[in-house]
Amino acid sequence: MGTLDGKVALVTGASRGIGAGVARVLARHGANVAVNYLRAKDKAEEVRDYIKSIGRDAIVIQANVMEGSDVRHMVDVVERDLGPVDILVNNAGHNPVRNILEIEERDWDWVLGLNLKSYFLCSKVVLPGMIDRGSGRIVNITSISGQRGGLSGDVDYSAAKAGIMGFTRALARWAAPRGVIVNAIAPGYIETDALLQLGESRVSQLAQTVPLKRLGNPEEIGEVVAFLVGPGGNYIVGEVISVNGGVHIA
Image (cartoon, rainbow, N blue to C red):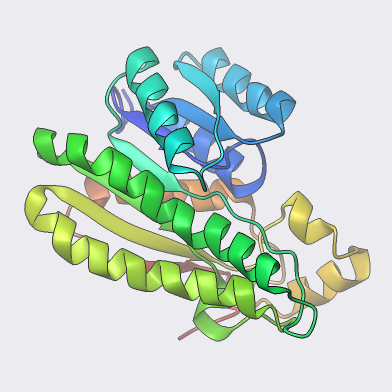
């Protein structure tokens, strides 16, 4: 018996990286999982196949989470195939790593759309059902960049991730009396394809700044998500949990 047996989780941006790690861990704790993706269908199917291999149900669902109509259709499909969404993990995001002089207006709009607007759209669609049932959990994945600012002058990504923290706190205050618990997680340096693209030398330098002297892995983020959406998170509301190996101790 898992702590999440019978629960339905929707994880956005779950074809790779942190999202994939979260999806796998939630399934190991008993949840049935909807794996959202935009382009990497093959990777999303690998996550789905893993979840099914351990005896849980899973589907893949393509949706552009920056588009309200796509989000509505995604949730409709999840509820048809798996059941009402008990857990939403807003994870979809990307950091192009550009400084302010390199960022065009359209770039700013795209980064804020993917990393912040999508959280609003997905939350708004699942909340009515959660409120009707008197229960639900939302976990928003933010970043150390939102806490201290990105190291590459990436003001768009840092602003979006800081916005997620404010969004989380405001939504948590409103949703908790209605039976829905909302929190956020701020990962540090996590071993994902996006981080590894910085190159071996840069990644090694970053790892050495971490008191634990290593990168985190996506499933370590997943375990914290599982805690927050399980019984351990019953009285945790509106928090931003730092998971960064001690590299940023506020």
